[in-house]
Amino acid sequence: MNQERRDQSITRIFKAVFPDSTNHYDTLFGGTAMALMDEVAFITATRYSRQRMVTVSSDRIDFKMPIPAGTIIELVGMVSYVGNTSLKVKVEVFIEQMYSNDRDRAISGEFTFVAIDENKKAAKIS
Image 1 (cartoon, rainbow, N blue to C red):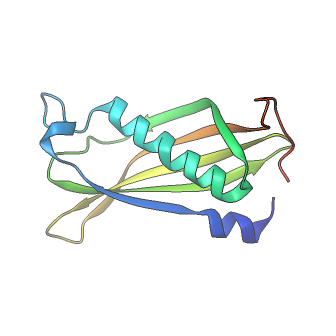
Image 2 (tube, helix red, strand yellow; image 1 turned 30 degrees about the horizontal axis):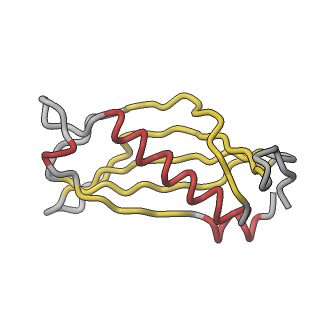
C-alpha cells in the first residue's frame, strides 16, 4: 500500500442529523448510516485508486451507540488494505454535540471495493 496515497485519500464528511433522517426513537436510521458510510468509503476508494470502483461487500458494521437527532456526525474513511484488484476502506462515524466539545465514536465498519474496467470486469489497481 502506498502510504502517501493512503494519507491523501482520507475522506472526512460532516452531516447534521435532522428529524427527517431519524426513526421513532429520534435516532439516525441504521440504513441511512450505512448508506452514508458506503458513500464515504466509495469516495475514499476512488480518491486512492483514481479508477472505477464498486462495492462488493461490507464487513461487520458495529453500532456502538445511537446517534440522536440534533447532533453533528463526522464520517471518516481510510484505506486499510490494497490487493491486486480490490481494496478495503475502514469507515468510522463520530458524534459531535452541537453545543459542546463532546465527541464519541458511534459506528465503525469496513467496505471492500473492486476496481473495474470499461467492460465492468475486475481491473488491476495501479
